Length: 88
Image (tube, rainbow, N blue to C red; front, side, top):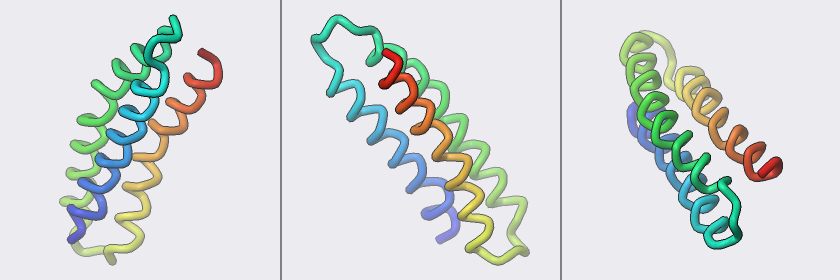
């Protein structure tokens, strides 16, 4: 369950945020959607790989702190996406 809550769920949240911004900015002449798409193209798999490695290496520790650190890392990308959407 660590991998589900520490790797898969944060990745799904990132994908949903990218999808929402890309769909929400279609047709207004802004490159915000493209920037978010390109950021997501790199950030989503990279975050999932980093989180999977972290969960694997922290097997002996309690699950809750490990999963919370994974969520903390995974939520950096949606914050950056929000910043891009506000600026763009």
